[in-house]
Figure (cartoon, rainbow, N blue to C red):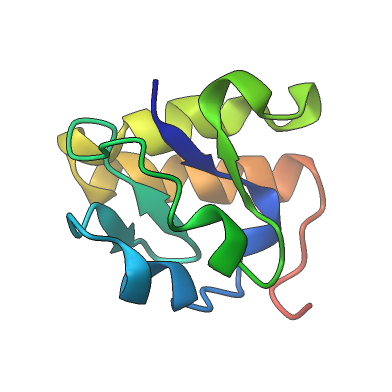
Length: 99
């Protein structure tokens, strides 16, 4: 299991979670932060630091944000895989650039 960053992070990218991650598994994509599932050690340090409550254990991710599992798991393939998935989700769900 890993942690997943979901929709509330789109166009926010607060980075508080990055500062507390002991293994540096949180990375900045074009419009949001993502967790590398291969690097995440499931410590949970990031979850309480997120000011927009965008971070969840994978098994506790709200069903409406299930697409973010694929988005976060795409990280090892590169940002050229992550960014189009985020943009497609944002377009489909009308997530605005300025929150």
